[in-house]
Image (cartoon, rainbow over all chains, first blue to last red; front, side, top):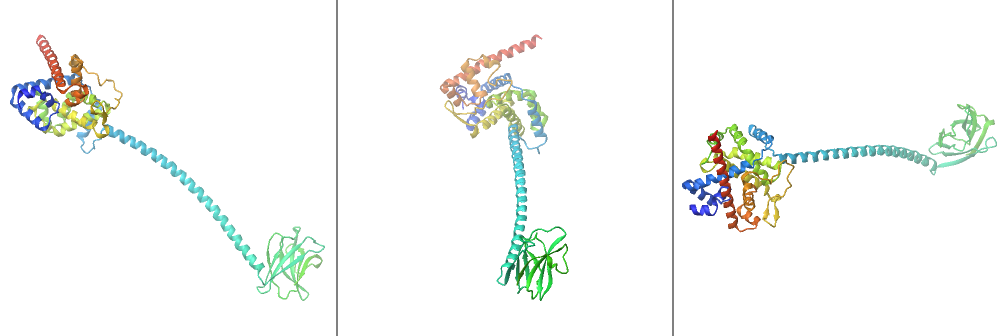
Length: 250
Length: 187
């Protein structure tokens, strides 16, 4: 490549500015090395551009040199440009915010879970109670509703006209259940007591409390009638017949 | 070739992997290179990263530098320019421009005490179109082809702008050298 072409086409400027193709670059390099005039022209060009650069120099912050030194002094330290550090810082902030949000949600979820667990416990307890009541009621129903069960109604006499007791007698299973809810309440020193009449002898069946729905009493063989008397609290060995308030014949 | 003698000694130390030699060159040339990089990318923090990257490349590639082929500054300028252009012309930063076909990023300059567009020294003595031509190719990294399209003049005309501008710069710097030489002899 001759001098004239290089100078007229501004190839020296392009060479300096690194605009030439690889082939042109090599040709100009060789030409400059061989041609003193070209070499001097290029040297002047370099000097001018360098002078212009220094006239327009801007002092970089000290931290750039410090970062460069850190990077070269410790190659193990991964080079992290400032822009990447800013990206990393942004990601860290996002991560922290996400973490706080997740923590908040987690706390809320845990609270909800605890509430649900409490509710479940309450519901479980209620279910147990209902099941227990159902079992009891079912058992009672079976005991009073079987085909072998004979219901007897003991209506109160003049001593206790409002008294009304229903006794369920099952001779096969030898059980007696009494519904006492319609018995009037008694003073604390008194109690109801139930008796079976067997061949004229009154045999104790047990105490009857008006507070219970169904009371299980002793089954007495060959009973002819069931009788209720008012006795001193704790019951009596023999019935106080004057205080007989109701009876039913079997 | 036109290399300052003290630079040759430092560069030889740098070729021997002397970090202090690199830091000496940094102290001497970083401001000139930073002025170019900052005007090219118009982003303070990015320019700082690119300056650091430029000197890392100088450290890594110093064996490829041949003082017989040109000044150290010219070689370092090429590295800085290519590093900057590679960064700002990444696909995600390219913006189609009616003027240029492909223009570099249009990022808003960060706060800086300096106006990046402002230029100092002999370049301000040039005719406006000559100054623009030099600014485009040297401080903005445009190729001649891109720059002449940007200015809306034929390539041949643009080349003559560059040639004339360089001639004025040459005269200006020659006069300055003469003045400096005279002053030194006087005192």
